Image (tube, rainbow, N blue to C red; front, side):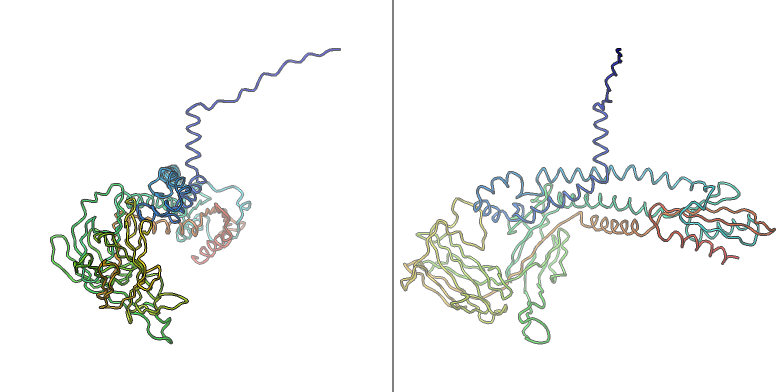
Length: 521
């Protein structure tokens, strides 16, 4: 006996096509899950920007990092790790997040608009099947009781609609979805504000010794980081002169706090706006100075010993206050003096400035108090090529790759110089002399312009408000049904509550409506 079977036709899967794939990609990109993932990816992508030196902030440090790590540095540089915020991959994450948030907000805004314009749904026939339900009987005619319930619901900020003569449908909590939308729109606003600040903003850092003026020009900044769309030749020409820097340190060992801790920093300046008159202005740590073309912040301070270097004939080769950067709380500071005009070879000096100096065999040269009670200058001298290969380098450090140390006069391999204010040291071999003339203070100013900061601040506050509203406000629906009681002049009232999400207080809300009804009688 044989049987014959008819072969089944092959199953043909539907083909998406180009339009289908584009629609699928758009839906994936604009999903909330993708937006959260991109937000996390943006935070992770910003980590290299705070881990590795950035060219736009400190080109000398970046060049030194690459020189110290030639193999790893070449790979990381190709990946854009030394210019993270201007790299294509960071911009791609940023733009995708921007598009994803817009794609999330637009359809939800349209749905929310329809919800605001629509009426609450009809009351179910069986209110006792709802999660929160109460039934009671009160005195009064059904029409009067229903009107009293309408007033009670409106008093509790419900939007009420009657679909028939026996029921009421009420709904509230629209602020929850509104807060959610505000939060996402505010995130877009933050992205826009940050983008505006990055494109049109700039930051410049400069160290200004006491008595020295600073003009707001590109060449006067120690470091300058402009946005891609900033015209560096169009800076407003204001001038800021540091008249005096007042610093107060803790001198008591008991009662007030830690010995040597800073108590107050105040820079007294003379500010001359473009085309205006000079005026006295004060800059504090938390009290910046507004110039109209940037905000001046007081970020640091230190000492700038005035050093003079002369050749063998007594001609000045170098004479100016030289900032030394503090390394600890007692202002043990490091710095360098570079004299490219020295002959027959260029001279360089590197070492420490000690406000209250102590030199011992254990810790070497160091300061024991941040104020200039016993200032000392401890230096070593080198000769040779100051700028090997023309590489950029920090003005506070000496590159000794192509330099040799000067030998000490006592037969040691390294010449060591220790000076106090007013002292002069004669360099060996007829190379001239170096003089420690005195001590001045310097202030470290940071000038920043961020045209998007106000918009970013408003967006951040709106995001906080929206987040709080979306977490606190409950979306609730109440349904009321009234019917004549068994005896004349009595009305049976059924109230049922339904929450959009888990809401343990729905039962209390139903009870509160009935209590309001009782209170109105």
